[in-house]
Length: 453
Image (cartoon, rainbow, N blue to C red; front, side, top):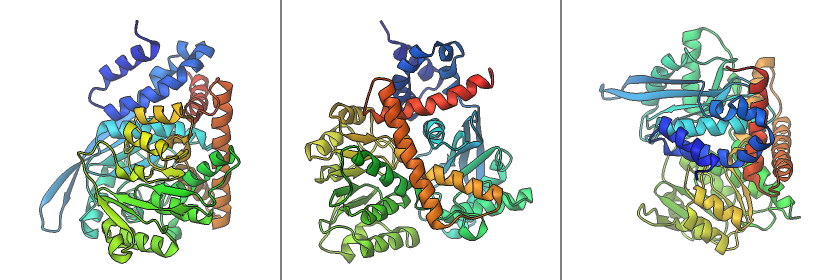
């Protein structure tokens, strides 16, 4: 006989065919929530779960723009406004060829719970386009962003929906998007986060996801009386999250060994120090080069090209104590998880969104290593976005130390909520259940209070 989870998921899959990332995200949350629904039949009666998996609004639109050779290009843009029960929709924009509705819905769904965990009043949303900024000139990126915002600006606002950056959307893109919004709407408001410091941005915002990921790992290690001091740390990715996670690990006395991008990964057994990190930041943020250039500069390091046909990623075979996946969804499969555990890794803190497959998550949970899922461990980015919104509303700016302290406190409170909730529902140490249940209950109670809408 089909379980309650199977029956529910069959309905979700029938309604949303071909959206496998969305199915994966919903399945993970639904499995955690069954004990909650048993304990609170009022949630079942009000169909909270059925309502929470259905976005409040999905917007898709055409984005035409002209490239440098005068050719007309056409991309697809979208915004999924998932849930606004506790505040305005909040979540990033992703510009990447892989973007489709299933990926944006999975990210928006995750964002609902992540934002609830931050303790700040933010709902969940996500958006983006299949546009690829890689290899494009600044003028091409500007023309695309202006066309994208010309349509998006009808649907967002400082009290309605506040997008931010994500993969492919950094400071340059946010600047072009904000400029076009201001031009069309004739108002200077905090409608985007991740803005430049001299026009409404917050200190620590670029660092926030990576810093928060490491603060969460620090809290998990603390439950075993340990710290980052002397730990071998493996980091995937080499973008914003990976860079600032590395910076914070160095602050806390750990030793980072790896960086990667879609072409492969580098291993530096001597450790990536601040000078090497600065080189990677310049390589990736300014020159927009490939990570393999690292070994030209530091020949003692090794580079291994990615093999798309391999059953596992050799990056996760590097011996380490702590793993910080910071690249993209489903980058760790069950073979990778087995390799991590076999090589004595006992702490995984996710900086990317859903970087571990369900099978990999099962390996982590069964072996009882410290495992911080993305919706808890990488909530630092959206937490500081929320702090940026507060500063914009009050027309003030906080110092670097103030924002960092607030971020640290938020990550501590997320960790505590996960630990306490997991214990209350009979699965002590299970951060997946803790995060899903704590986030869900906050949103569900708000939905109950506001009626059937």
